[in-house]
Length: 484
Ligand SMILES: Cc1cc2nc3c(=O)[nH]c(=O)nc-3n(C[C@H](O)[C@H](O)[C@H](O)COP(=O)(O)OP(=O)(O)OC[C@H]3O[C@@H](n4cnc5c(N)ncnc54)[C@H](O)[C@@H]3O)c2cc1C
Image (cartoon, rainbow, N blue to C red; front, side):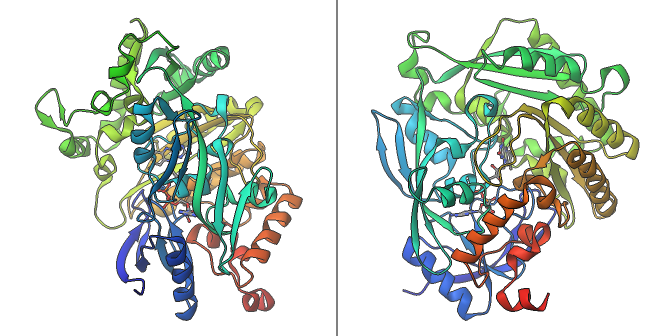
C-alpha cells in the first residue's frame, strides 16, 4: 500500500514558527525508504521529525516532505539481566521508562519532558540533569541502524562505522534516519530518589553548591529567578538528587510500579491539571512571572530548611510535564509563543557570561520567565553542544511585536557566548545565524561532517529549516553548490 500523505500544520514546540506541510507517517524501514523516494519524485526535500519537542525549527522543513517517525515505534527487545533495550525510533522516552522501571531500570539520560522520541533524542544527543556525571544520551547508546538518503542501511557502533556513529548522534537528522537503536539503561533499586533543596542568594552561591556536590550527587539542577537584580542576581534553588542504594527503600517493589509513578490528575484534590495552563496564562506577563519566580524562590528557601524528600523518578525527571500543555499559557494566537536560548559556556567564563546575560536581558526588558542552570561535561560526538562547563536555559516570551527585537537581543548575547568559547544546542534554537557552527567547532571536524553528508546524501535530500539557517551549505544540491 502506498504511503498516505496529508497536509498538516507542523510547528516548533515553542509555537513561534511553523507551516502547513505534506507529512507522512512511515511505520518501518521500508516505508521510510518509500518516503525518501516519494519526496525525490515530487521535487521535495525530506525533514525527519520525532515528537516535535524541539523548541525551534530542528524538525521543520519549509521545502520538505515531513517524515514523522512517531508511528515507527515498537520496543523490539529488552534484556532484564543487563538492562539493554532495542527500539524503533518513534518509541518515546515515556514509553521507554514505563517499560523498564517496573523491571528495575531507568533510562540513563532523559530530557526535562518525556514526550520526545528515541530517534529525536539521539539526533539531538540530549543531556539530562545528570550530564556532569554520565554524559549525554550518546554515551548510553550502544548501536543503531541509520537509513541514508540513497536507501542504504548502516549499522553503527563504537566498533563499527565509528565515524558515522559519532557524527549522526547529535547530527540533527542531516545524515540519515535512525531506524533501530540499542541503548543501556541504569539499574535502580527504588522508584524514588532522595531530593535535597538548596536555596542560594545569588548565582555564585548556586554554582559553588554544584561544584561542591558534583562528586556525590546523581542529579543537580538549578532553577533561577531571572528577575532578581543587584546582589541577588541569579538567586534560586538547586535540586540535588541521589539514587537509593539496594535495601534503602523497604517498599521498592511498590515504588517501582507504574501506579506509584502516576501523577494525579488534580491539584489540591479538585482542580484539573489539564486546565492549569489557563490559570498560568493570567500570570504570563512580566509582573506575574516576577511574582511566580519570587514565590518559587521562597518556597526553595523553605524546602532548604527541611530534611531531604523522596520524589518519584517520573516527578523529578519530568517536573514540567506535570502541567499539561503549559506552553499554551504563552498564548495560542499566531506569532505568540516562546523561544529557549541555551548557551553552554566553559567553567572559567560561565559565571561572568551568565551574569552579563541576565543583566543585559533585564536592561533590554526581555526577562526570561524560566531559567535553568546545569553542569555539563564534554563527550566525543562530533557536533556536541556539551562543554566542560555550564548551561543556562532561558525561556523568553515571543509576541509578534517583540519578535524581531528579541531575536536581535539573543543574537547579541550569542556573541558574548561565542567569544567565551561557548556553544549552543540546536534543539533549543530559533535565532542563531549562519556562521555559528564555524565558531563552535574546529574546521577539521566540520570538514569531516560535511564529507559524511556528501558520501551519504550527495543530492542533499535531508535538510531542515534549522540546517538551512545555521549551515546552508550543507543543504545545497550539487547544482546549488555549483551556482554559489
Ligand atoms: C519542555 C522541554 C524540556 C526539554 N528538556 C530537555 C533537556 O533537559 N535536555 C535536552 O537535551 N533537551 C531537552 N529538550 C529538548 C528535546 O529533548 C529535544 O528537542 C529532542 O530532540 C526532541 O525529540 P523529538 O522526538 O521531539 O524530536 P523532534 O524535535 O521532532 O526532532 C529533533 C531532531 O531529531 C531529528 N530526528 C527525528 N527523528 C529522527 C530519526 N528517526 N532519525 C534521525 N533524526 C531524527 C529531527 O530531524 C530533528 O533534527 C526539552 C524540550 C522540551 C519541550
